[in-house]
Length: 334
Image (cartoon, rainbow, N blue to C red; front, side):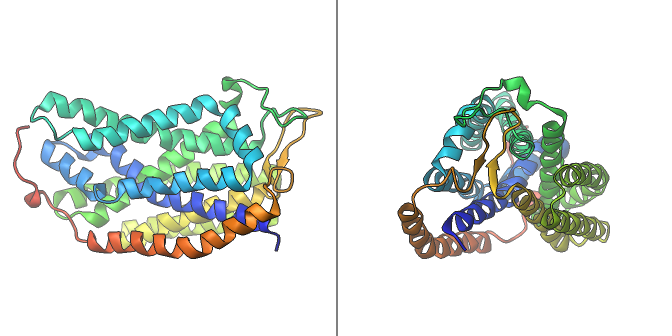
C-alpha cells in the first residue's frame, strides 16, 4: 500500500476520533438549556466533560497538522476556500474554551449566564459547520485548473451540505445526551435518557437521509456497505436507549459516527477535494501529497508517538470514569 493511501486513511481515523470524542462534548454543551434547569444541574453537565474536553480538541489539531504535512495542497486549498466557516469554528471553539475556564470565576448569576451562552453557541456552531464543510468536500467545490477555490461563501450553503450539517448537529446532540445519561445519576440521568429517546427518531431520519443521498450520488460499493452498517448500528443504539442501557447506547452512537466518517472517506477516495467547475482540476491523494521522504518520516513518528498518546488519553478517561450527581456539587447562588 502506498504511503499516500496510508496517510489518507490515518487522517480519516483522526477525524473519526475527533467526531466521537468532541462530538459528545458539543452535545453536552448544547444540552445546557435543555437539561440544565438550575446552576447545580448545569455544573453537573459541565463537570461530565470538564477533565477531558481540552484533550478531545487535540484530535482536530493533529488532524489539521497531519493534513498540512501529508497533503499540503489539500490543506492550502481547504483553508483558503473554507476560510470563513473555519474562522467561525475557530472563534466558537475559543469562546467555548474560555467560557469553561471563566464561568466560575465570579459568583454572579448574570456572569455565568453569559458564559453559558458562549458554551452553547461554541458547541452548536462547530457541530453544524463541520458537517457543512465535509458535505462540501464530498459534493465538490469550484476549483479551477490551478486548484484554487473560485466560489463564494454562499456556494457552500447548498442543500446537500446543509443536510450534512444537520446530520452532525443531531448526531452529536444524541451522542452527548447518551453520554450525560452514562456519566450522571439521579434526576439528570433520567431526564437525559428520556430526551435521548425523543432525539433518536429525528437523528435516524436525518442521518439516514444524508448517507443515502451521498451513496445515491456517488454509488460507491464500500460506501454503501459502511453506510448500511452505520444505519444498523444507529438503530441498535436507539434500541439500547429504549432499554436504558446507556453503556451500549454510547458505544452504538460512537460506532455510528466512526462508520459514517469511514463511509465518507471511502466514498471520497482517491480524491481529497473534487471540483464541480468545468475545466477545473480536483485534488487527489497523488497530486496533493508531500514527497515520499516526508511521508516516510511522518510514518515513523506516528508509529512511535500515537500509542503513547492513546494510552495517556485512555488513562484519563479511566481516572474520571465515575458518575456525577447533584449531591457532589457544592451549593452556589442561583
